[in-house]
Length: 410
Image 1 (cartoon, rainbow, N blue to C red):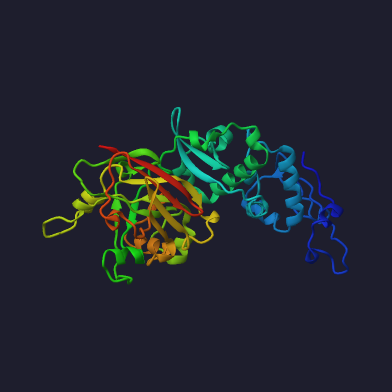
Image 2 (cartoon, rainbow, N blue to C red):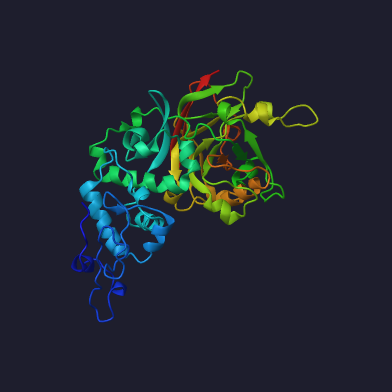
């Protein structure tokens, strides 16, 4: 049951501005079924589900006077007394009116989590990752099944608060009641199977341009290209097959961006708001196949779009957990030898600008993936130390994660 919150209880954590002018606490009471904090003024009941009002536009208006303190106190009691992710119950976010859902998001624990795709019995399954373990969503939240990482991104505005609730519950008590998959035992696939579009921006880091003996400047036309998602995108592990046709197989490490809203002719602020999360992308290249002896001179399909040449992972880190995507450290190691150490601050076209520009040519859909460019440190800069079967890439981006990939022969 949901217990009422008395004025005395509310007073203990109530800031001064929420008190009456003479310093006495206001009479703040939360009663299930009441539409505001003043029960005598507004007695119209709302339909309840497990002690909480059901949502709806009309309910949102009725709840506009509900006090944050009364709600947060009641919510914390409800969570501590009743919430267990192992039970088949409706998530709090679905039972609350819109304004209370937004308030709930701001008042909860905000446990960091990721969204991943795991290989599991029956096929690929969406999972939530917290504190070194992954939990299949279909096992802990029936309302989110059947689902995939892509469908979560397609409904990101509503799925994000649900995922946050699950993470908070797992971090407090749910993990003791729900079997998780340890990170080292999880068979991770690419985070999304598969985006409609997989795009990549080129020549976007100052250091990379210098390494190619090019002037460091913002070009009038931003270079970008498309890869076929289903054949090029792979996840962590021994997943990359070096094409037989190349002798110069090279690496690049990039911040990968997942789109959470449709973008068409978007301005930069709209593009920024559409970023759902981040991962690590490896832009692998056959350097000896890019430059060709014909009038076109460049072949990006043979050079960059062959099978398995776009590893991505390990999971999607929601954008709200990345403080400043324009200042993240990028590191890459090959067989434990450091090859790259740079920062996303070197980007010439910032992430929101990239998305905005691309949206004027290609309509971006939720789930789409963008590789945002690579810093310097590729194989040619290390004496032509090209990748060969058995080589291990360890890539890190601060606040985002670690991606480990091993090369194998095609």
